[in-house]
Image 1 (cartoon, one colour):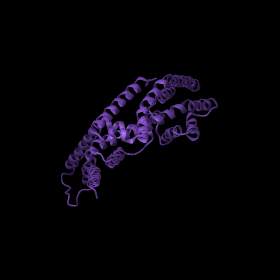
Image 2 (cartoon, one colour):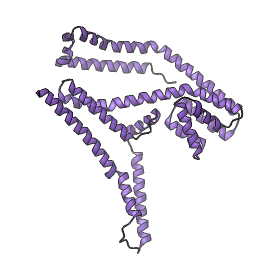
Image 3 (cartoon, one colour):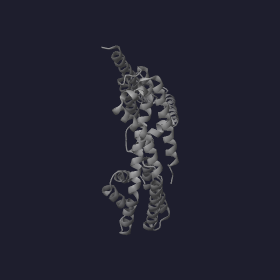
Image 4 (cartoon, one colour):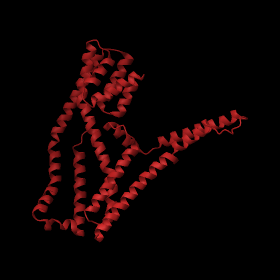
Length: 333
């Protein structure tokens, strides 16, 4: 085996061992040494005391142990409130994307992505220590980018279907159906993700939650302005009464006007968006054409140190320009 191949194999093995060690250590910590695990152990010792326990002074001992458990619960609650903002954002994006999994599973997937990126980098034959510079950013940003994309796509699909769903409620109320039956019709006949969200709302009501509480949970999963408008309208109608069909008709008019404005902004900004796409793709197209026609000419960018610097600076400038152009055409309605 050549020395270069041996270095690559050793680098991949070390990266895999490092990632698996981190994941195993995290799981062991969560099961044995986390605040929740210590609380379970403490509660178990209080609920199931040893057979040699003495009944004398039970009231004072039980009161002291109960106070310790309450203090521990309060401490854990404070720690949960002090969780990092990034963890809460990841959980929120997972709910918006429709994933009902734990955040730790997302972190495990990020570690796997980082390991795959390190292995792919080592196969290119560049400096082996560069894998430790490439893997962490790829493992951190790529899963979050994909998750954010899926969440935004799901919210756009929900928003596009929402006005038609409200029209179903309007027609149902005018024909004499109660609001709960109209929500069931939407849950059964609408496409996803509209059907899934309204199905959870109806199931929450069947379990005993009020419509306000069910709508609040829906807003946690789908925090769109349109759904917030609908929740406010339903809350006001329950408190004050009135013609629900007329109110929802006015709401659908507002939602469709917002959609028209959004489509108009998309059409106006299409030129700048496609300009950014074309300019950003040209260097890669030219690089591919040169690799196909004259590889020796273009490979200097990847085999020479100065060429690597030029490639890095070029990628940084293109990324900065793309971000600036994206912010210029990103309008909030």
